[in-house]
Length: 28
Image (cartoon, rainbow, N blue to C red; front, side, top):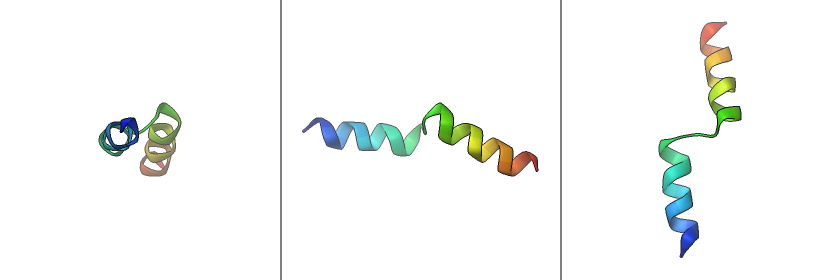
């Protein structure tokens, strides 16, 4: 049951590690 909530949260707000990866790719 918690899996669904966690998945939705992860899809909307990626983890800091993922966010950093996206920022780095965009920055470059």
